[in-house]
Length: 172
Image (tube, rainbow, N blue to C red; front, side, top):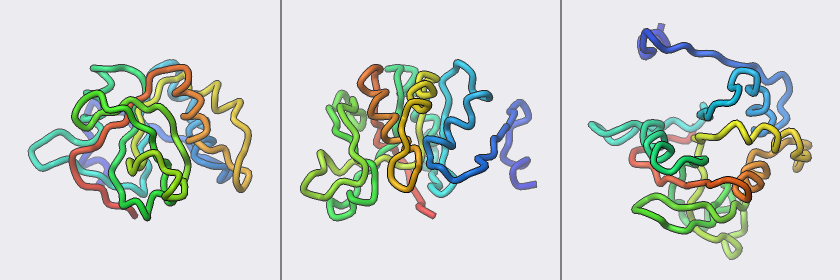
């Protein structure tokens, strides 16, 4: 009932089950048949976000940046430097207030190796070009296909932007 109460009548929700825990990259790859050749959003359920009251939601903010710049959009948030080793961190080149072109990505760097303190948080707008990259991404730590590895490759070929979200994030 809760899902129906927040779901607009013209919205169709679909899901894909990831049969084995083989990483976030694998989970995204599982959705390829549903996505087809359209840009799509990835929302991680353990990162709850809400926009500023009276303002656009986080996904709407990301869609606006995508409409303006195209490419991939990563939601980011500043974190204390001593916490960068918990996140994927972007190497940013600022192009507008709160919007950065991603020049690189580092997964869980040591504080002295981090290019910034802008951490990737659980929202992504991605192009379908991520799928062939994910298929070629070799499993990393724990035998998992890391989305960050595929994003790093995607950023070499296509524009990628980091958006500092306006709102509140609740990490579950």
